[in-house]
Length: 257
Image (cartoon, rainbow, N blue to C red; front, side):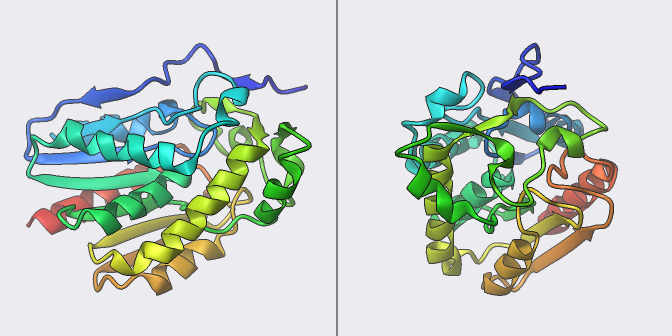
């Protein structure tokens, strides 16, 4: 059956803030082509621990794929940066993100040394064939997600909870994602905060070796890479979500203590 261009449009994928009772804030960022639906289960779990959680909808997302054509990676970053202001009332702020959201989290950490820690869920630092996008973009605006070798559809990997987002990609936006990858690698030597990385071994959307690359390049003395045996790309919705939730909270609590 042919997939709709916009998966699960009936769900609420807008920005949201969950106020907590503890002096902890988490900026939680969704991935490329997704919406905040992707991170809501994790956000609600973190909020149940007393943390304040803000999840912004990134520019070009949650509307129609064509809206991503004119977006630059700096627009995504600026939205994420402004998201920190929503948590300014909390003395201990963490940044976390799925896929592209993980890349934005690293840039925020590189430029905001006061952040307490960074949590990355399948960070999209390596994607097979992404270099093609900048050459194809002038001729083809929108393509199905399987235009890249070995790329899998998000929904196929998220059979535990629903995912919302585009089932196609704007090639101009993919080219911006590649620029974001390069910017992260350029600034990663500034990330000294503790970092926790989750990576699914069954990930076919990005190249899982990218998480190993980030782990090796990070100058932080407190860093961990957790491999998930039965998860694909969207680890914040997949089969090992309960484990991801518990390890995330453990990471935060250990740093607070």
